Image (tube, rainbow, N blue to C red):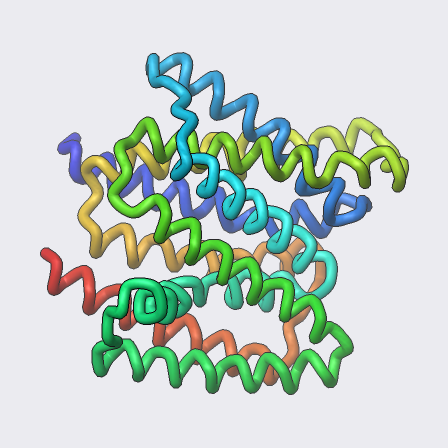
Length: 280
C-alpha cells in the first residue's frame, strides 16, 4: 500500500480512538481529576515505551516545558468538562481551539485576521450563544465553560508546538502527561477512588488506547497524510464522540446544544479545509 494511503488510514484510526474518550470518562465513577491523573500516568508510560522503541530523545527546554504545562491543562479541563456537562458539549467546545489560535495570533503576533477568520469567529460565537442557553437550561453551564478553557489551552499548546521537530513534539506531549498526573494526584489520595477489574479495564483503554496509541498514530500519520485529509479525518472525533456516549451511556445533548454543535463543527471544518487547500 502507498505511504500516503497508510497515513490516511492511521489518521482515521487515530481520530476514531480519540473519540472513545468521552464514553470511558463517563463510565469511570471517579472524580474528573482522578481520571485525568491516572489516565495520563498510563498514557505517559505507553508513549515513553514508544519513544524508546523509536530511539527518540526526551528534550527539556523552555518550549517543551510550556507545551507540557498547557497540554496538561487541556487534559484536566477536558476530563473534568466531561463530568460536568454532556460529552457532546465538551468535545465540540474544545474543537473550537483553531478560533483561539486566530485570536492569539492577532494579539501576540499582530497578525490581522482575514475575512474568513472573522466569519468563522462570528459563527463560533453564535454557536456559543446556543451552548450558553442550553447550559443555563440544563444546569451545566460551568461544565461548558471548562470545555471552552480546554479549547483555549489547546490553542496555546498548538502555538507553542508550531513546526517543532518530531522529538520536541513528542517531548512536549509526554511532559503534558506528567503534568496532568502530578496536578491530579492529590485528588487520588483525598477522594479514595474504588478500584475493580472493570475500572482498571476502562483506565487501560483510556490510557493505552485512547491517548497513548492514538498520539503515536497521529505523529506517524502526519509524515505522509496530506493536511486536507488530516483536517477532514480529525472531524471524526467530535462527530463520533457523542454517538458512542449516546449508544452505550444513554446521554443525549440538548436541542440548543445540537444547534451550537452544528454551527461550530461546520464553520471550523470549512475554515480548516479552505486553509488546507490553499496550503496545498
